[in-house]
Amino acid sequence: MSELTFRFVVPGDDYSRAGEASSTVKNRLKRLGIDPAAIRRVSIALYEGEINMVIHGGGGEVIVSVTPQRVDMVLEDHGKGIPDIALAMQEGYSTASDQARSLGFGAGMGLPNMKKYTDEIEVSSVVGQGTTVRMAVLL
Amino acid sequence: MESFFHSVKLNKELCVGCTNCVKRCPTGAIRVRDGKAFITKELCIDCGECISICPHHAKSAVVDSRDSARRFRYTIALPAPSLYAQFNNLRDQLPVLRGLYGLGFDEVYEVAKGAEMVSSLTDQYLREGKLTLPAISCACPVVVRLIRTRFPNLINHILPILPPVEVAARLAKRDFCAKMGCTPEEVGTVFLSPCPAKSTACRDPLGFDKSAVDLVVSIKDVYPTLLAAMKRPDLPEYGELCGKMGLGWGISGGEAASLTHENYLAADGIENIIRVLEDLEDEHITGVDFVELNACPGGCVGGILTVENPFMARAKMQRMQKNLAVTGYQPRGVEERLLLFDHPIQFCEVLSLDQDLATAMELLNRIDEVESRLFGMDCGACGAPSCRAMATDIVMGRASEDMCIYKLREGLAQQTDKEEVLV
Image 1 (cartoon, rainbow over the protein chains, first blue to last red):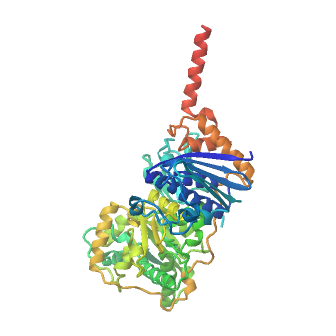
Image 2: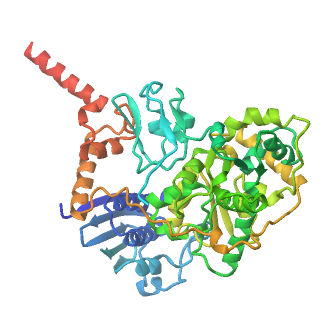
Image 3: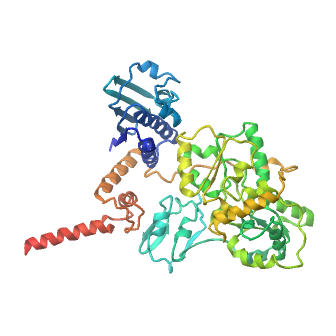
Protein backbone atom coordinates (compact mmCIF):
# COMPACT_ATOMS: atom_id res chain seq x y z
CA MET A 1 0.00 0.00 0.00
CA SER A 2 1.82 3.08 -1.21
CA GLU A 3 -1.05 5.53 -1.43
CA LEU A 4 -4.32 6.19 0.37
CA THR A 5 -6.97 8.39 -1.19
CA PHE A 6 -9.92 10.13 0.40
CA ARG A 7 -12.60 11.90 -1.64
CA PHE A 8 -15.16 14.41 -0.43
CA VAL A 9 -17.91 16.45 -1.99
CA VAL A 10 -18.10 19.96 -0.53
CA PRO A 11 -21.60 21.40 -0.85
CA GLY A 12 -21.84 25.06 -1.85
CA ASP A 13 -23.41 27.62 0.49
CA ASP A 14 -23.69 25.36 3.52
CA TYR A 15 -21.38 26.84 6.12
CA SER A 16 -22.36 24.31 8.74
CA ARG A 17 -20.89 21.50 6.68
CA ALA A 18 -17.65 23.22 5.73
CA GLY A 19 -14.92 21.48 7.68
CA GLU A 20 -16.27 17.95 7.30
CA ALA A 21 -13.49 16.97 4.92
CA SER A 22 -10.71 18.50 7.01
CA SER A 23 -11.97 16.98 10.22
CA THR A 24 -12.38 13.51 8.65
CA VAL A 25 -8.91 13.73 7.13
CA LYS A 26 -7.45 14.87 10.45
CA ASN A 27 -8.94 11.92 12.30
CA ARG A 28 -7.76 9.46 9.63
CA LEU A 29 -4.24 10.87 9.73
CA LYS A 30 -4.18 10.49 13.50
CA ARG A 31 -4.77 6.77 13.01
CA LEU A 32 -1.68 6.66 10.82
CA GLY A 33 0.53 8.02 13.57
CA ILE A 34 1.72 10.91 11.38
CA ASP A 35 3.60 13.77 13.07
CA PRO A 36 0.95 15.88 14.88
CA ALA A 37 2.43 19.13 13.58
CA ALA A 38 2.03 17.93 9.97
CA ILE A 39 -1.54 16.81 10.67
CA ARG A 40 -2.33 20.24 12.04
CA ARG A 41 -0.97 21.94 8.93
CA VAL A 42 -2.98 19.66 6.62
CA SER A 43 -6.10 20.21 8.65
CA ILE A 44 -5.85 24.01 8.77
CA ALA A 45 -4.97 24.38 5.08
CA LEU A 46 -7.74 22.02 4.04
CA TYR A 47 -10.31 23.81 6.18
CA GLU A 48 -9.38 27.16 4.64
CA GLY A 49 -9.77 25.57 1.22
CA GLU A 50 -13.14 24.10 2.06
CA ILE A 51 -14.37 27.47 3.33
CA ASN A 52 -13.22 29.07 0.09
CA MET A 53 -15.14 26.46 -1.88
CA VAL A 54 -18.28 27.28 0.09
CA ILE A 55 -17.91 31.07 -0.04
CA HIS A 56 -16.60 31.52 -3.57
CA GLY A 57 -16.66 28.22 -5.42
CA GLY A 58 -20.25 27.07 -5.02
CA GLY A 59 -18.95 23.75 -3.72
CA GLY A 60 -16.80 21.17 -5.41
CA GLU A 61 -14.63 18.14 -4.79
CA VAL A 62 -11.70 17.48 -2.49
CA ILE A 63 -9.23 14.67 -3.08
CA VAL A 64 -6.58 13.92 -0.46
CA SER A 65 -3.82 11.40 -1.19
CA VAL A 66 -1.41 10.18 1.43
CA THR A 67 1.91 8.47 0.80
CA PRO A 68 4.64 7.86 3.37
CA GLN A 69 6.40 10.95 1.96
CA ARG A 70 3.62 13.49 1.55
CA VAL A 71 -0.03 14.49 1.83
CA ASP A 72 -1.43 15.93 -1.39
CA MET A 73 -4.67 17.87 -1.50
CA VAL A 74 -6.57 18.81 -4.64
CA LEU A 75 -9.55 21.13 -4.25
CA GLU A 76 -11.58 21.67 -7.36
CA ASP A 77 -14.62 23.89 -7.71
CA HIS A 78 -16.70 25.05 -10.65
CA GLY A 79 -17.36 28.53 -9.33
CA LYS A 80 -16.71 31.99 -10.67
CA GLY A 81 -12.91 31.66 -10.79
CA ILE A 82 -10.16 34.07 -9.67
CA PRO A 83 -9.26 36.87 -12.14
CA ASP A 84 -5.99 37.87 -10.39
CA ILE A 85 -4.41 34.99 -8.47
CA ALA A 86 -1.44 37.07 -7.25
CA LEU A 87 -3.85 39.57 -5.70
CA ALA A 88 -5.92 36.80 -4.12
CA MET A 89 -2.76 35.41 -2.50
CA GLN A 90 -2.19 38.71 -0.67
CA GLU A 91 -3.10 38.83 3.01
CA GLY A 92 -6.22 40.87 3.65
CA TYR A 93 -7.52 40.87 0.10
CA SER A 94 -11.07 39.53 -0.01
CA THR A 95 -14.05 39.48 -2.32
CA ALA A 96 -16.28 37.69 0.20
CA SER A 97 -19.93 38.69 0.36
CA ASP A 98 -21.41 40.65 3.24
CA GLN A 99 -23.16 37.46 4.30
CA ALA A 100 -19.84 35.62 4.57
CA ARG A 101 -18.30 38.54 6.46
CA SER A 102 -21.21 38.65 8.86
CA LEU A 103 -20.39 35.03 9.71
CA GLY A 104 -16.82 35.98 10.54
CA PHE A 105 -15.28 34.89 7.26
CA GLY A 106 -13.82 37.02 4.51
CA ALA A 107 -10.73 38.33 6.33
CA GLY A 108 -8.64 37.77 3.23
CA MET A 109 -6.55 35.09 4.92
CA GLY A 110 -7.81 32.00 3.09
CA LEU A 111 -5.24 31.51 0.34
CA PRO A 112 -2.42 33.18 2.32
CA ASN A 113 -3.00 30.73 5.18
CA MET A 114 -3.12 27.80 2.77
CA LYS A 115 0.26 28.92 1.45
CA LYS A 116 1.63 29.47 4.94
CA TYR A 117 0.68 26.04 6.26
CA THR A 118 1.72 23.94 3.26
CA ASP A 119 5.03 23.15 1.57
CA GLU A 120 3.73 23.37 -1.98
CA ILE A 121 0.78 25.24 -3.42
CA GLU A 122 -0.37 25.81 -6.97
CA VAL A 123 -3.54 27.69 -7.85
CA SER A 124 -5.03 27.58 -11.32
CA SER A 125 -8.23 29.27 -12.29
CA VAL A 126 -10.35 30.12 -15.28
CA VAL A 127 -12.82 32.94 -14.76
CA GLY A 128 -16.33 31.65 -15.16
CA GLN A 129 -15.22 28.00 -15.04
CA GLY A 130 -13.70 27.40 -11.65
CA THR A 131 -10.57 27.08 -9.55
CA THR A 132 -8.25 24.22 -8.72
CA VAL A 133 -5.90 24.42 -5.74
CA ARG A 134 -3.17 21.81 -5.36
CA MET A 135 -1.39 21.77 -2.02
CA ALA A 136 1.09 19.41 -0.39
CA VAL A 137 2.46 18.92 3.09
CA LEU A 138 5.71 16.94 3.12
CA LEU A 139 6.11 14.29 5.82
CA MET B 1 3.80 7.86 32.88
CA GLU B 2 2.29 5.21 30.64
CA SER B 3 -0.08 4.12 33.36
CA PHE B 4 -3.79 3.99 32.54
CA PHE B 5 -5.46 3.56 35.89
CA HIS B 6 -9.23 4.14 35.84
CA SER B 7 -11.98 4.61 38.37
CA VAL B 8 -14.68 2.67 36.55
CA LYS B 9 -15.37 -0.92 37.48
CA LEU B 10 -17.69 -3.50 35.94
CA ASN B 11 -19.86 -5.86 37.95
CA LYS B 12 -19.93 -8.76 35.47
CA GLU B 13 -22.95 -10.35 37.12
CA LEU B 14 -25.08 -7.27 36.55
CA CYS B 15 -23.86 -6.62 32.99
CA VAL B 16 -26.34 -8.07 30.50
CA GLY B 17 -24.23 -7.20 27.46
CA CYS B 18 -26.55 -4.51 26.13
CA THR B 19 -24.82 -1.74 24.22
CA ASN B 20 -25.96 1.37 26.07
CA CYS B 21 -22.47 2.14 27.39
CA VAL B 22 -20.82 1.13 24.12
CA LYS B 23 -22.87 3.69 22.21
CA ARG B 24 -22.53 6.40 24.85
CA CYS B 25 -18.74 6.25 25.31
CA PRO B 26 -17.28 9.41 23.72
CA THR B 27 -13.96 7.79 22.85
CA GLY B 28 -15.29 4.45 21.57
CA ALA B 29 -13.43 2.65 24.34
CA ILE B 30 -16.05 0.01 25.14
CA ARG B 31 -16.88 -3.27 23.39
CA VAL B 32 -19.27 -6.02 24.35
CA ARG B 33 -17.41 -9.31 24.02
CA ASP B 34 -18.79 -12.64 25.25
CA GLY B 35 -21.80 -10.80 26.57
CA LYS B 36 -19.94 -8.34 28.83
CA ALA B 37 -18.85 -4.73 28.36
CA PHE B 38 -15.08 -4.33 28.42
CA ILE B 39 -13.16 -1.06 28.50
CA THR B 40 -9.97 -0.54 26.51
CA LYS B 41 -8.01 1.23 29.20
CA GLU B 42 -5.78 3.24 26.85
CA LEU B 43 -8.84 4.97 25.39
CA CYS B 44 -10.86 5.54 28.59
CA ILE B 45 -10.82 9.12 29.87
CA ASP B 46 -12.79 8.52 33.09
CA CYS B 47 -15.71 10.69 32.06
CA GLY B 48 -18.22 8.42 33.80
CA GLU B 49 -20.75 8.46 30.93
CA CYS B 50 -20.91 4.64 30.98
CA ILE B 51 -21.67 4.64 34.70
CA SER B 52 -24.54 7.08 34.36
CA ILE B 53 -26.10 5.45 31.27
CA CYS B 54 -26.03 1.82 32.47
CA PRO B 55 -29.64 0.81 33.23
CA HIS B 56 -28.45 -2.27 35.13
CA HIS B 57 -26.03 -0.44 37.44
CA ALA B 58 -23.30 -2.80 36.29
CA LYS B 59 -20.73 -0.02 36.12
CA SER B 60 -19.67 1.89 39.18
CA ALA B 61 -17.03 4.35 40.28
CA VAL B 62 -14.00 3.24 42.24
CA VAL B 63 -13.85 5.51 45.27
CA ASP B 64 -12.77 5.05 48.86
CA SER B 65 -15.10 4.27 51.72
CA ARG B 66 -15.30 6.65 54.67
CA ASP B 67 -14.09 3.81 56.90
CA SER B 68 -10.73 3.70 55.14
CA ALA B 69 -9.93 7.02 56.84
CA ARG B 70 -9.60 5.15 60.13
CA ARG B 71 -6.01 4.24 59.39
CA PHE B 72 -5.03 7.87 59.92
CA ARG B 73 -4.59 9.46 63.34
CA TYR B 74 -6.04 12.72 62.04
CA THR B 75 -8.27 13.40 59.06
CA ILE B 76 -8.87 16.57 57.05
CA ALA B 77 -12.00 16.97 54.92
CA LEU B 78 -11.53 18.67 51.55
CA PRO B 79 -15.06 19.55 50.38
CA ALA B 80 -15.44 20.24 46.64
CA PRO B 81 -17.43 23.46 45.98
CA SER B 82 -20.14 21.31 44.36
CA LEU B 83 -20.81 19.66 47.75
CA TYR B 84 -22.38 22.87 49.07
CA ALA B 85 -24.96 22.91 46.29
CA GLN B 86 -26.40 19.53 47.34
CA PHE B 87 -28.34 20.95 50.30
CA ASN B 88 -31.51 23.01 50.52
CA ASN B 89 -32.05 26.48 51.95
CA LEU B 90 -28.43 27.36 52.62
CA ARG B 91 -27.44 31.02 52.77
CA ASP B 92 -23.80 30.00 52.64
CA GLN B 93 -21.63 26.90 53.10
CA LEU B 94 -21.13 27.33 56.87
CA PRO B 95 -23.58 24.58 57.96
CA VAL B 96 -21.85 22.12 55.63
CA LEU B 97 -18.39 22.92 56.97
CA ARG B 98 -19.55 22.63 60.59
CA GLY B 99 -21.35 19.43 59.72
CA LEU B 100 -18.07 17.95 58.49
CA TYR B 101 -16.61 18.44 61.98
CA GLY B 102 -19.68 16.64 63.21
CA LEU B 103 -18.70 13.67 61.03
CA GLY B 104 -15.45 13.42 62.96
CA PHE B 105 -13.02 15.27 60.72
CA ASP B 106 -10.30 17.06 62.70
CA GLU B 107 -9.98 19.82 60.15
CA VAL B 108 -11.94 21.12 57.17
CA TYR B 109 -10.18 22.93 54.32
CA GLU B 110 -12.27 24.29 51.48
CA VAL B 111 -11.10 23.25 48.02
CA ALA B 112 -12.65 26.56 46.93
CA LYS B 113 -9.79 28.37 48.72
CA GLY B 114 -7.28 26.36 46.68
CA ALA B 115 -9.30 27.34 43.61
CA GLU B 116 -8.95 31.05 44.39
CA MET B 117 -5.18 30.62 44.73
CA VAL B 118 -5.08 28.89 41.35
CA SER B 119 -7.07 31.78 39.84
CA SER B 120 -4.67 34.29 41.34
CA LEU B 121 -1.61 32.51 39.94
CA THR B 122 -3.30 31.97 36.55
CA ASP B 123 -4.03 35.70 36.37
CA GLN B 124 -0.41 36.47 37.21
CA TYR B 125 0.90 34.05 34.57
CA LEU B 126 -1.46 35.49 31.95
CA ARG B 127 -0.24 39.00 32.77
CA GLU B 128 3.40 37.95 32.64
CA GLY B 129 2.90 36.14 29.32
CA LYS B 130 4.12 32.85 30.80
CA LEU B 131 1.46 30.64 29.21
CA THR B 132 0.97 29.13 25.76
CA LEU B 133 -2.30 30.71 24.65
CA PRO B 134 -5.02 29.83 24.86
CA ALA B 135 -4.27 28.18 28.20
CA ILE B 136 -6.60 25.26 28.85
CA SER B 137 -7.70 24.62 32.43
CA CYS B 138 -6.59 21.31 33.94
CA ALA B 139 -9.15 21.32 36.77
CA CYS B 140 -11.33 18.73 35.00
CA PRO B 141 -9.22 15.55 34.80
CA VAL B 142 -11.28 14.30 31.85
CA VAL B 143 -10.06 17.23 29.76
CA VAL B 144 -6.43 16.45 30.57
CA ARG B 145 -6.95 12.78 29.70
CA LEU B 146 -8.69 13.68 26.44
CA ILE B 147 -5.87 15.98 25.39
CA ARG B 148 -3.09 13.59 26.29
CA THR B 149 -4.50 10.82 24.10
CA ARG B 150 -6.29 12.68 21.29
CA PHE B 151 -5.03 16.25 20.93
CA PRO B 152 -1.24 16.21 20.66
CA ASN B 153 -1.16 19.76 19.34
CA LEU B 154 -2.86 21.09 22.46
CA ILE B 155 -0.75 19.38 25.09
CA ASN B 156 1.46 22.41 25.73
CA HIS B 157 -1.66 24.54 26.22
CA ILE B 158 -2.60 22.71 29.42
CA LEU B 159 -2.34 25.13 32.34
CA PRO B 160 0.75 24.02 34.31
CA ILE B 161 -0.81 24.99 37.64
CA LEU B 162 -2.11 22.22 39.90
CA PRO B 163 -5.85 21.64 40.18
CA PRO B 164 -7.49 23.26 43.24
CA VAL B 165 -7.95 20.02 45.17
CA GLU B 166 -4.24 19.31 45.00
CA VAL B 167 -3.32 22.81 46.15
CA ALA B 168 -5.86 22.54 48.99
CA ALA B 169 -4.56 19.11 50.05
CA ARG B 170 -0.94 20.25 50.13
CA LEU B 171 -1.65 23.42 52.09
CA ALA B 172 -4.16 21.78 54.44
CA LYS B 173 -1.65 19.10 55.38
CA ARG B 174 1.18 21.55 55.80
CA ASP B 175 -0.84 23.93 57.97
CA PHE B 176 -2.31 21.14 60.08
CA CYS B 177 1.07 19.53 60.75
CA ALA B 178 2.49 22.91 61.76
CA LYS B 179 -0.44 23.54 64.09
CA MET B 180 -0.50 20.09 65.71
CA GLY B 181 3.20 19.26 65.55
CA CYS B 182 2.46 15.95 63.84
CA THR B 183 3.96 14.22 60.80
CA PRO B 184 2.29 14.25 57.36
CA GLU B 185 1.92 10.45 57.55
CA GLU B 186 -0.38 10.79 60.55
CA VAL B 187 -2.76 13.01 58.60
CA GLY B 188 -5.20 11.73 55.97
CA THR B 189 -6.70 14.20 53.51
CA VAL B 190 -10.15 13.14 52.33
CA PHE B 191 -11.53 14.75 49.17
CA LEU B 192 -15.32 14.78 48.94
CA SER B 193 -15.65 14.41 45.20
CA PRO B 194 -18.42 14.93 42.65
CA CYS B 195 -16.91 12.55 40.07
CA PRO B 196 -14.78 9.43 39.56
CA ALA B 197 -12.35 11.26 37.28
CA LYS B 198 -11.03 13.21 40.25
CA SER B 199 -10.53 9.92 42.05
CA THR B 200 -8.39 8.72 39.14
CA ALA B 201 -6.52 12.03 39.12
CA CYS B 202 -5.57 11.59 42.78
CA ARG B 203 -4.51 7.94 42.44
CA ASP B 204 -2.71 8.30 39.15
CA PRO B 205 -1.89 11.98 38.71
CA LEU B 206 -0.66 13.39 35.40
CA GLY B 207 1.95 16.13 35.57
CA PHE B 208 3.04 15.45 39.15
CA ASP B 209 4.33 12.40 40.91
CA LYS B 210 2.28 11.96 44.03
CA SER B 211 -1.03 13.42 45.08
CA ALA B 212 -1.40 14.95 48.54
CA VAL B 213 -4.99 13.65 48.54
CA ASP B 214 -5.03 10.39 50.50
CA LEU B 215 -8.63 9.31 50.01
CA VAL B 216 -11.43 10.20 47.63
CA VAL B 217 -14.95 9.71 48.96
CA SER B 218 -17.98 10.38 46.80
CA ILE B 219 -20.40 13.17 47.65
CA LYS B 220 -23.32 10.76 47.37
CA ASP B 221 -21.75 8.38 49.91
CA VAL B 222 -21.15 11.11 52.46
CA TYR B 223 -24.43 12.95 51.82
CA PRO B 224 -26.86 11.08 54.15
CA THR B 225 -24.59 11.08 57.20
CA LEU B 226 -23.47 14.64 56.56
CA LEU B 227 -27.07 15.79 56.29
CA ALA B 228 -27.74 14.22 59.69
CA ALA B 229 -24.54 15.66 61.19
CA MET B 230 -25.44 19.18 60.02
CA LYS B 231 -28.47 19.09 62.35
CA ARG B 232 -26.47 18.42 65.49
CA PRO B 233 -26.63 21.26 68.02
CA ASP B 234 -23.09 20.94 69.40
CA LEU B 235 -21.01 21.66 66.28
CA PRO B 236 -17.80 23.69 66.57
CA GLU B 237 -17.48 27.06 64.88
CA TYR B 238 -15.71 27.44 61.55
CA GLY B 239 -13.29 30.23 60.58
CA GLU B 240 -13.44 32.42 57.50
CA LEU B 241 -15.58 31.21 54.61
CA CYS B 242 -14.29 31.11 51.07
CA GLY B 243 -15.99 33.77 48.99
CA LYS B 244 -18.08 33.68 45.85
CA MET B 245 -15.24 33.32 43.35
CA GLY B 246 -13.94 30.05 44.78
CA LEU B 247 -17.44 28.59 45.06
CA GLY B 248 -18.09 29.45 41.43
CA TRP B 249 -15.61 26.76 40.36
CA GLY B 250 -18.37 24.22 41.07
CA ILE B 251 -20.40 25.45 38.11
CA SER B 252 -19.46 25.82 34.47
CA GLY B 253 -17.97 29.23 33.72
CA GLY B 254 -17.05 29.89 37.34
CA GLU B 255 -13.37 29.28 36.95
CA ALA B 256 -13.09 31.55 33.93
CA ALA B 257 -15.20 34.24 35.62
CA SER B 258 -12.88 34.25 38.62
CA LEU B 259 -10.05 35.57 36.46
CA THR B 260 -9.58 39.30 36.05
CA HIS B 261 -8.69 38.44 32.47
CA GLU B 262 -11.88 38.64 30.43
CA ASN B 263 -10.93 37.02 27.18
CA TYR B 264 -12.09 33.49 27.88
CA LEU B 265 -14.35 30.69 26.74
CA ALA B 266 -16.17 28.14 28.91
CA ALA B 267 -17.88 24.95 27.74
CA ASP B 268 -19.38 21.96 29.47
CA GLY B 269 -20.70 18.51 28.55
CA ILE B 270 -18.46 15.86 27.05
CA GLU B 271 -19.57 16.23 23.41
CA ASN B 272 -19.28 20.00 23.61
CA ILE B 273 -15.80 20.02 25.06
CA ILE B 274 -14.58 17.57 22.43
CA ARG B 275 -15.94 19.91 19.78
CA VAL B 276 -14.18 22.88 21.36
CA LEU B 277 -10.91 20.94 21.52
CA GLU B 278 -11.26 19.95 17.85
CA ASP B 279 -11.91 23.57 16.92
CA LEU B 280 -9.00 24.82 19.03
CA GLU B 281 -6.68 22.26 17.45
CA ASP B 282 -7.74 23.33 13.95
CA GLU B 283 -7.56 27.01 14.90
CA HIS B 284 -11.22 27.53 14.08
CA ILE B 285 -11.46 29.08 17.52
CA THR B 286 -8.97 31.90 17.85
CA GLY B 287 -8.58 35.04 19.89
CA VAL B 288 -9.28 33.59 23.36
CA ASP B 289 -6.61 33.45 26.05
CA PHE B 290 -8.19 31.05 28.50
CA VAL B 291 -10.40 28.00 27.99
CA GLU B 292 -12.37 26.39 30.78
CA LEU B 293 -13.79 22.97 29.97
CA ASN B 294 -15.89 20.72 32.17
CA ALA B 295 -16.84 17.22 31.03
CA CYS B 296 -20.03 17.15 33.09
CA PRO B 297 -23.13 19.10 32.08
CA GLY B 298 -23.27 22.33 34.06
CA GLY B 299 -19.79 21.77 35.48
CA CYS B 300 -18.84 19.79 38.60
CA VAL B 301 -22.40 20.06 39.99
CA GLY B 302 -23.27 17.71 37.10
CA GLY B 303 -20.80 15.07 38.32
CA ILE B 304 -22.21 11.56 38.52
CA LEU B 305 -21.34 11.17 42.20
CA THR B 306 -23.60 14.03 43.27
CA VAL B 307 -27.21 13.75 44.41
CA GLU B 308 -28.91 17.01 43.38
CA ASN B 309 -30.17 17.76 39.87
CA PRO B 310 -27.29 19.68 38.23
CA PHE B 311 -29.43 22.63 37.19
CA MET B 312 -31.00 22.96 40.62
CA ALA B 313 -27.53 22.67 42.14
CA ARG B 314 -26.37 25.46 39.89
CA ALA B 315 -29.26 27.67 41.00
CA LYS B 316 -28.46 26.97 44.66
CA MET B 317 -24.80 27.72 44.12
CA GLN B 318 -25.59 31.05 42.47
CA ARG B 319 -27.91 31.92 45.37
CA MET B 320 -25.12 31.25 47.87
CA GLN B 321 -22.67 33.25 45.81
CA LYS B 322 -24.93 36.30 46.15
CA ASN B 323 -24.59 36.13 49.93
CA LEU B 324 -20.84 35.74 49.96
CA ALA B 325 -18.05 38.29 49.92
CA VAL B 326 -15.14 38.34 47.50
CA THR B 327 -12.22 36.77 49.36
CA GLY B 328 -9.63 36.27 46.63
CA TYR B 329 -7.33 33.91 48.54
CA GLN B 330 -3.76 34.18 47.37
CA PRO B 331 -0.92 31.76 47.82
CA ARG B 332 0.97 34.13 50.13
CA GLY B 333 4.03 32.65 51.75
CA VAL B 334 3.66 29.52 49.63
CA GLU B 335 6.57 28.48 47.47
CA GLU B 336 5.41 28.77 43.87
CA ARG B 337 6.67 25.31 42.91
CA LEU B 338 4.18 23.81 45.40
CA LEU B 339 1.43 25.03 43.07
CA LEU B 340 2.95 23.83 39.82
CA PHE B 341 3.22 20.60 37.86
CA ASP B 342 6.46 18.68 38.47
CA HIS B 343 6.83 17.87 34.78
CA PRO B 344 4.94 18.55 31.56
CA ILE B 345 2.20 16.10 30.59
CA GLN B 346 3.35 13.76 27.83
CA PHE B 347 1.30 12.87 24.77
CA CYS B 348 0.35 9.18 24.62
CA GLU B 349 -0.02 7.75 21.14
CA VAL B 350 -3.06 5.48 21.41
CA LEU B 351 -4.83 6.07 18.10
CA SER B 352 -2.14 5.03 15.66
CA LEU B 353 -2.86 1.69 13.97
CA ASP B 354 0.80 0.76 13.57
CA GLN B 355 4.18 2.29 14.27
CA ASP B 356 5.17 1.87 10.65
CA LEU B 357 3.42 4.41 8.42
CA ALA B 358 3.16 2.14 5.38
CA THR B 359 1.65 -0.64 7.49
CA ALA B 360 -0.77 1.80 9.12
CA MET B 361 -1.83 3.00 5.66
CA GLU B 362 -2.42 -0.58 4.56
CA LEU B 363 -4.54 -1.22 7.67
CA LEU B 364 -6.54 2.00 7.19
CA ASN B 365 -7.18 1.03 3.60
CA ARG B 366 -8.45 -2.37 4.67
CA ILE B 367 -10.66 -0.75 7.32
CA ASP B 368 -12.26 1.42 4.60
CA GLU B 369 -12.73 -1.70 2.48
CA VAL B 370 -14.34 -3.74 5.28
CA GLU B 371 -16.50 -0.79 6.32
CA SER B 372 -17.85 -0.53 2.76
CA ARG B 373 -19.02 -4.17 3.03
CA LEU B 374 -20.86 -3.53 6.30
CA PHE B 375 -24.29 -1.94 6.25
CA GLY B 376 -23.71 1.41 7.94
CA MET B 377 -26.55 0.84 10.41
CA ASP B 378 -24.32 1.54 13.43
CA CYS B 379 -26.69 -0.71 15.38
CA GLY B 380 -24.13 -1.85 17.91
CA ALA B 381 -25.42 -5.43 17.98
CA CYS B 382 -21.93 -6.76 17.24
CA GLY B 383 -20.67 -5.09 20.40
CA ALA B 384 -18.87 -2.20 18.67
CA PRO B 385 -20.33 1.34 18.71
CA SER B 386 -20.34 1.82 14.91
CA CYS B 387 -19.69 -0.02 11.68
CA ARG B 388 -16.45 1.95 11.37
CA ALA B 389 -15.31 0.77 14.81
CA MET B 390 -16.35 -2.78 13.91
CA ALA B 391 -14.40 -2.60 10.64
CA THR B 392 -11.36 -1.50 12.65
CA ASP B 393 -11.82 -4.38 15.10
CA ILE B 394 -12.10 -6.86 12.21
CA VAL B 395 -8.94 -5.61 10.50
CA MET B 396 -7.04 -5.56 13.79
CA GLY B 397 -8.09 -9.17 14.43
CA ARG B 398 -10.35 -8.44 17.39
CA ALA B 399 -13.64 -9.35 15.71
CA SER B 400 -14.98 -11.18 12.68
CA GLU B 401 -17.49 -10.21 10.02
CA ASP B 402 -19.94 -12.94 11.03
CA MET B 403 -20.59 -11.02 14.26
CA CYS B 404 -22.61 -8.52 12.19
CA ILE B 405 -26.28 -9.51 12.32
CA TYR B 406 -26.97 -7.90 8.94
CA LYS B 407 -24.14 -9.95 7.43
CA LEU B 408 -25.62 -13.02 9.07
CA ARG B 409 -29.04 -12.24 7.66
CA GLU B 410 -27.57 -11.70 4.21
CA GLY B 411 -25.79 -15.06 4.49
CA LEU B 412 -29.00 -16.80 5.53
CA ALA B 413 -30.94 -15.23 2.66
CA GLN B 414 -28.34 -16.42 0.15
CA GLN B 415 -28.41 -19.89 1.64
CA THR B 416 -32.21 -20.01 1.42
CA ASP B 417 -32.08 -18.91 -2.21
CA LYS B 418 -29.65 -21.71 -2.99
CA GLU B 419 -31.81 -24.29 -1.27
CA GLU B 420 -34.83 -23.13 -3.21
CA VAL B 421 -32.89 -23.52 -6.43
CA LEU B 422 -31.89 -27.04 -5.44
CA VAL B 423 -35.50 -27.98 -4.74
